[in-house]
Length: 375
Ligand SMILES: *[C@@H]1O[C@H](CO)[C@@H](O)[C@H](O)[C@H]1NC(C)=O
Ligand SMILES: *[C@@H]1O[C@H](CO)[C@@H](O)[C@H](O)[C@H]1NC(C)=O
Ligand SMILES: *[C@@H]1O[C@H](CO)[C@@H](O)[C@H](O)[C@H]1NC(C)=O
Ligand SMILES: *[C@@H]1O[C@H](CO)[C@@H](O)[C@H](O)[C@H]1NC(C)=O
Ligand SMILES: *[C@@H]1O[C@H](CO)[C@@H](O)[C@H](O)[C@H]1NC(C)=O
Image: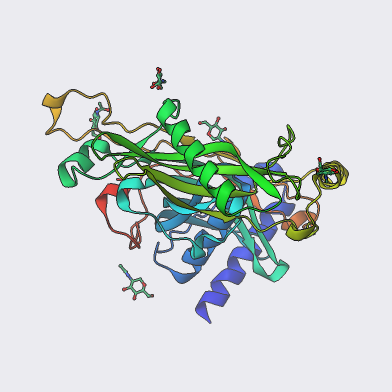
């Protein structure tokens, strides 16, 4: 009851400010609440925000929420709140193109993890059925190679330079195997390498993950396949490796195919018709009003450091910043046109609150491993 009353009061205050002349807005300085980072409502908002971040991304692997690092909430006139979220995330085994929900994706082995932090501005108005992510920015890094070397000297190491010809060789050998054994009427081709780990088995070996595209083959002459069209899209992701110590060498791995578009049945594949159709639908559709944001990939800070400053842990920082305004009192947040809100109900967005953490933050981590938790 008390909560409902105080909410009512806030709504009245904001209602008053939005109709008063601009000079008077100063009197109702925006009130930022500091809910707990373990609050169930905060956790569900963080989950929705992360879903929308993953949906917006075009490359990399789906992020899973490890913990809510910080949160501020700003109640809005009418109903709804704007949340300023700082989320600690870890990447998973699912590529973003799989379009899975992060809750269905598990994080990989700690040595192959990429982890980091996202800042997000998120507007929720449940009575109006609005969950909207206007902006985000994330910074991610691979797990520190130096820390891994002490903890697990034999663990595979994540590498970011994909130009080593042995990586391409591993991809070719793996593709040759799946094209020979598992495909009928089509052939898979490399689209893009997405992750490489190297480990030592009597010499460097590579475990590679890569997106594949496909092209049709003549069913009566399976060796006659077309080249994939220049605008071919990835259809799946493969992870494979080659054990060169075995005789004959042993090629192993798996591929997972993305859910096809609802319009294209996988059995009736006809690229001549499918490609122009897809292009037509994307140009006819209204421009999507997606969030503003990006993911910045920073290198492992311990790579290239000299051995003797070993005791001093390098400062690992995740400098993600997000901002929709620099106006201290905020600005009206304009929503995409399909959200129907009265003008006076439009939320106010403030500069992202930086500085000290809220008292009951960070929340508990799902994986409290310091290797994959931002400081
Ligand atoms: C990546 O690796 C290739 C071959 O090993 C090397 O020639 C190239 O200089 C490397 N690039 C970077 C940016 O380290
Ligand atoms: C497959 O190859 C045969 C023999 O060259 C040819 O007659 C046939 O038209 C080809 N089929 C397709 C679908 O291209
Ligand atoms: C590392 O962090 C400390 C404390 O946060 C700071 O004083 C120091 O300048 C930082 N060092 C580097 C190299 O950034
Ligand atoms: C995200 O970060 C970049 C680089 O710091 C910055 O230029 C951009 O404005 C940020 N995006 C938003 C929406 O704040
Ligand atoms: C977080 O909340 C859950 C359930 O509400 C509770 O069981 C748990 O002890 C809380 N954890 C912390 C660290 O407060």
